[in-house]
Image (cartoon, rainbow, N blue to C red; front, side, top):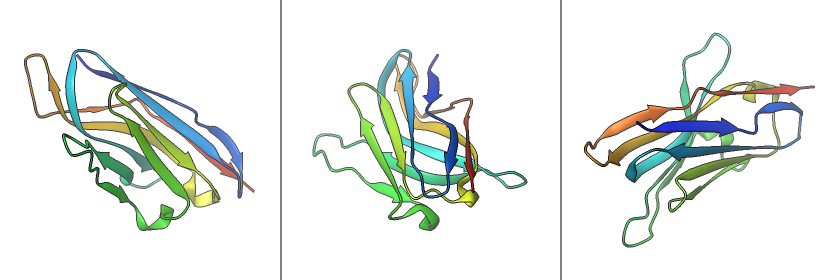
Length: 126
């Protein structure tokens, strides 16, 4: 079984920064895509940022929601199965529960799996 553990959420001021970290553990052979999703109060969960596995070429594809482009940066360590989200210039509308996601997970005996973390709360206050 694969588990995702998030850390780094909390309270930030408008214009401030937070860094979220997520570590995947278990019998992992490969993770295709790791990313972060956000669920704001009263809204559905939505993609914030994701990054694919670089594979043999090292070429990774990143995706950002339009509303975080230029403010948030996703990074990933494939050897450690970790993904981080650096959040700068925070706005009140960035408030929500942030979930780590691992998709296209291959374990010792299964492939194509998807896992979610339990979420970490980010509150941006003015």
